[in-house]
Every structure is written in structure tokens, then in C-alpha cells.
Amino acid sequence: MKKLLLLILLLVFSCSDSDSNQDCCSIDPENQPLTYQAQTSLKDLASFPVGNIVSANKIQINNQFISTLLNDFNSITAENDMKMRNMFIGPNEYDFSDGDVIVSFAKENGIRVFGHALIWHSSIPDWLQNFNGTDSEFEGLVENYIKSTVLHFSQEKMIINGQEVSVVSGWDVVNEAFTNQADNAIFRQRIGSDYVEKCFIWAREADSDVKLFYNDYGLETNSNKVNQVLNMIDYFRNNNIPIDGVGLQMHIDHINPLLQQIEDNLQLFINKDVLIHFSELDITVNRNSDISTLTFERAESQENRYRDIVNLYLNVPITNRFGITLWGMRDIDSWLLNHHNNPNEYPLLFNTNYETKISHRGFAEGLQ
Ligand code: G3I
Image (cartoon, rainbow, N blue to C red; front, top):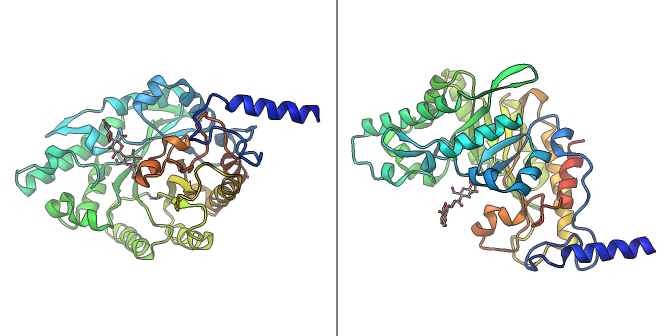
């Protein structure tokens, strides 16, 4: 009894100076735990790399972020710093400085970097969008950009398990091509409908080893899009166009889509014998904005969902497992708060104080 009282006092005390709008507290209003003490780190439990997103800025200044990152993760993706808009600053002019910071950090800590993303219609620099040269000049600029970027980031090496490997192990070459926005974007308009395959060829010409991915959202549910991606893989293979893997972004909800549907779609990619990356995993619990603080009921549902999704990933044959990457560390860091205009969304594994939510336990259990 004394112990229980002490525990409650400790919990209340540890929450007293935190932001009341967030899931600061490790218990919900009914005194049920929203956090837990993790015993083992995710990367140690996993048979594949477990990743999270970073920025050059965070890994230079935020010690709590860094220690959380290095404790649980062994793969990092730049949330924004290695996108076209950030790197391609003018015709044949590049700024790789943020990416370089990320690569040095990874090398120092012996973890891999995944490159995201060379071509995406939502990350076009203004000068390129407004480029008024010919289509063939435009194509030349994009070709040089892909080759220069992939080559630049192929140069840092590290030793992993006695083998020399590039710190940057793979790239999302093209992101989200099967959408109306992509159809209307300058890449298709100016290079032509074969722009996707050209981008993969250019990337391969710059680095013969790096893994080349196509990345998209909705591949868990949208059978139209799934078919387009599957057909693309077949077409690439039949025409000697390089592709190593597919990124299923996995921005999903704690309830939808049904696990069976995700499993069925995943199987279609497994059947193609490509590398599979759950590349941007997060799980919303408040899409209807009906809670204003994380409740135990939602936290537990999210924990179960993380366990199911991670467990599902084990259906992927071991040699095809590229890894699972979380799209954010703490709930308050998530892109979803802005995107859904909802400050009360809790999609990730850590709360505001970098405490491990029970969703983290779900992830850990799914690995076992
Ligand atoms: O850096 C500027 C800052 O200077 C400015 O003051 C501020 C004002 O809004 O904007 C800042 O840039 C924002 C940037 O994130 C960095 O925070 C952009 O507006 C904002 O659009 C950008 O959002 C990113 C989004 O991609 C678009 O690039 C999100 O952080 C990032 O999580 C999100 O990630 C994407 C994946 O790349 C692809 N799949 C979907 C996923 C979610 O949209």
C-alpha cells in the first residue's frame, strides 16, 4: 500500500511542471498508465533496422532527442533536409550541408542513413518550378541533380559487421508518383510520362550499390495505386530498369484500415520479391478530434495496433526486410498535428517528455 502511494506521488510530481495541453502525464485521468519503463531498445529486439526521422538542427543541439534516438534506433531519414527543395538551390548548384551533418552523425554512431526523397512534386524549388528554358534543358538539370546528389552521398563509408558500406544505404528515388498532383507536376509535364524510369536509371548510373526505392502512401488500402506500383515493378524488371524496393509509408489510424487489408496488400509486394520498407509509420488515435488528452482506451488501442503492424512486417522474408521507420519521435513533433490541424493527436512512441508511451511496448512486443 505504502509503495502504491509513493508511486502515485511520484507520478503526480513528475507531471506537475509540464504542458497541460499535451500527454505529459504517464497516467490518464482514470489512473491508468500511458507510459511504461522500456527494458530493451527496439533496435536490439529487431531483426531489421528500426528508424526515425531527424533534422540537421536537432542532431546538433537537442541532447534529449539524440539520446532517445541512439537508444532505440539504428537508421535515420531526414524529415526534410534531403529533399529537392532543400538541396537543389540553383541550376547545377547544390547545398548538401544539412545532409552532410546527418551523414557525419550517422557515421560517428555507426547507424545508416536512408535518403528521402530525390523527386517529389511537393518539394520543388521555386526557381526550378519557374524555369523557363527548354524541356530538354529542364531534363538535363534534373538528371544532373539526381546524379550529383546520389554521387555526393555515396562517398561516406563506414564499417558494419566487418564490411565497408555506404552510410547512405538507399534512396526514395521518386515519391508519390501515382497521384493527380504528380500527373500535373513539372516532372511529367516537361520530361514526359517516362520520367520515373529515367530517374531510377540516373540514380543507378551515379551509384551501382545504393538501394533504389519507390515510396508512396495509401499502398495499404488503395488497390488502384497498388496495381500501378506492381505494374511499374514488372515493367522495370522486363526492361532492365533498376528498382530494389518499395516504401509503404504507413500513415494509418488505430482502427482503419483493417489489418487483413494491409496484410493482403503487403503480400502483393512480398510476391514481387522486392525490399520492403515501412517508411513513414505513424498511427493516429484522434482523427475525429473527440478527445483533448490521450486516454488509456486510445493509448491501449494504439499499442495493440503498433504490435499488429510490426508483427505483420515479420511476414516479409528476412532478406527483403529493409526496415521500419517511424515518422517522428514525440507526439508533438508529428507532421500530423499541422496536417490535421489538431494539436490533440498522439501518433508516435514518445510523449512530450520523451517518456516511452505504451505504444512503444506494442512496437517492442510486435518484434518478438
Ligand atoms: O522551414 C520552414 C520554416 O522556415 C518556416 O518558418 C515554416 C513556416 O510554415 O515552414 C518551414 O518549413 C516547413 C517544413 O516542413 C519544416 O518544418 C514546411 O512549411 C512544411 O511544409 C514542411 O512539411 C513537411 C512535409 O513533408 C512537406 O515537405 C513535413 O515536415 C514532413 O513531415 C512531411 O513529410 C512527408 C514525406 O516527406 C513524404 N510523405 C508524406 C509525409 C507527410 O506529409
